[in-house]
Length: 224
Ligand code: HEC
Figure 1 (cartoon, rainbow, N blue to C red):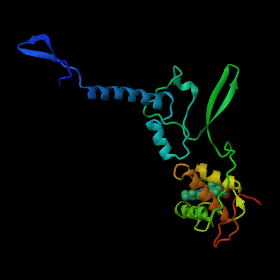
Figure 2 (cartoon, rainbow, N blue to C red; figure 1 turned 90 degrees about the horizontal axis):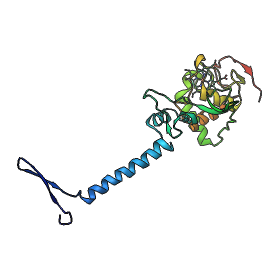
Figure 3 (cartoon, rainbow, N blue to C red; figure 1 turned 180 degrees about the vertical axis):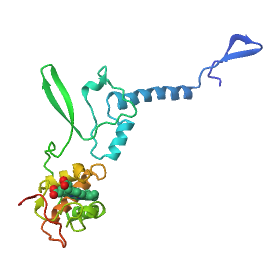
Figure 4 (cartoon, rainbow, N blue to C red; figure 1 turned 180 degrees about the horizontal axis):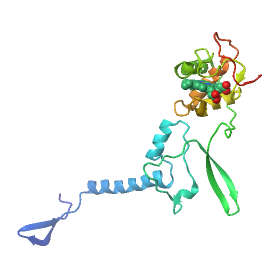
């Protein structure tokens, strides 16, 4: 301890004296490191927003298609994100699009729907992907659409008639968004994007396979 110049202070409380020691260097460095760390932490999570907050980490775990809200006008002083209550749930599946107002540019967020989603989805053709799609289908879809796509609670997926369109993109969108009011749930939260494409690619191969006990056609004839 020779390097520290201990100093006996001029205090005396009922015989108790006080030493003014220098803080050990290793301790000081730990302290400085925590300060540096906290600055980096704040920049990473709160100022630049590169890191996901706990809410966002949770949302991205339960919904593979989670998109973060990043409206420019929800920032306090233009830097820190606005405070949200812990019960705040970022809306899922949002596409920013801009509306030009006379007063300036306003950013708006809308819920994606099969109508607003204009993505041209492309089917997998690799046999391994189709086989993976079949596994997913048997586990998740067969109870309503039948083991071979012949239909049941849900419509026949092996015929040429479709309620919501029969292109690959239409099928994919039926799986992504579902038709919740008609009993077909949205699979966004359960299947990863690749799995959705796999199962839709498999569904596409069912077309024209004429499985036994088919459910009568529903919807419109889609000739392809
Ligand atoms: C709980 C039952 C149920 C499950 C499970 C289910 N579906 Fe459906 N599905 C339906 C119903 C009911 C409809 C018809 C919706 C309507 O009438 O608009 C439908 C519609 C569809 C359509 C559109 C058909 C058309 O004619 O346009 C596709 C494609 C589809 N489902 C694929 C799937 C896939 C792939 C899975 C598994 C990931 C799946 N479904 C799981 C009940 C189900």
